[in-house]
Image (cartoon, rainbow, N blue to C red; front, side, top):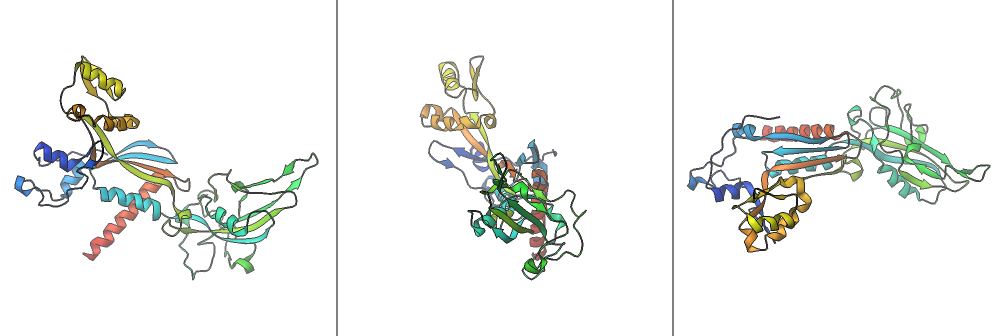
Amino acid sequence: MTKKKKEKQKLPEPLETQRNYVLCGPIVNTHTNTATSASMYMPMDVDNAWDFDDWTGHFDIQVQELSPERLVFDMIGVDPAVANALRRILISEVPTVAIEHVFIVNNTSIIQDEVLSHRLGMVPLAVDPGALAWRSGEDAAGEANSVVFKLSVRCSRAADGSLVNEKVYSRDLVWLPAGSELPEETGCRFARSQEGTFASPPRDVEQNILLAKLRPGQCIELEAHAVKGVGREHAKWSPVATAWYRLHPEVVLLRPVAGADAQELAAAVPGLFTVEDGQLVAGEARRHKDKLERVRRLLEDEKWAEAIQLRKRKDHFIFTIESTGCVPAEDLFRMALDILAAKCDKLAARL
């Protein structure tokens, strides 16, 4: 979405650069703090107070890559605290469904019961968390707050000598829409079937996750009960493989560079620097992110330090969300925004 931008009050160029950019030096970065004080630039007759109309004129989100597993977008015009809040919400506060209780009937494999249970808990499940209610420690397990899976695998030897069910995979988990087959032992009783509760049947996200290996005569029989939770309680509920951001990089020329110097820089960082009509031209830094460290090393030489500048925009974030597959990446972003908005409403109500 693109909005009409309101012109901001300008500072002298050195201070404007200090306010808006992190300068990347050969050893340390400078101007890393964000100017948040409203009166910070009052001697320059510039009001640095946050203004909603000004913010809406500069805020923008530009999607660069979108798939069910991955979302990359530019978030422009926000404070680092907002970007970091979204990152933390994605990791620890967006709910998913994961296996919480494992009831083992028989396990004669070499893997211990507790290790097998932990592995099952870390298997990402494609279950809509919105279709389930939260379950506290006092609530009984039922169709409203639990999803039940069964795992029953026995290894045997075929007539030709090959092994049948030698490996136990996540795809061997079978959803039980009618609920637990061991209600007395598990305490889980469904009043009705979960058929039709979910848009698609609950299943594991990746079918080829190896859970255990068996030898002839060994077996695993168990029930796994999944509930809704958040990553703050345990990492198995975290919906993202990772959620991270980086500042938008820029390489700018502080003075014209031509002749032999231009050729030298173009050879040192090919692609990022090119020579056109004898003059050095700096390309788009984000397209050459793997070469930016070369630019940083060049700045050790005073000759280049006064000619080129590597900097990063403080309010422009390149955000990446990689889903575990439990929830599409786009939906994760929307859910994180809803949670952040709810937090803001809660805070505003207390003011």
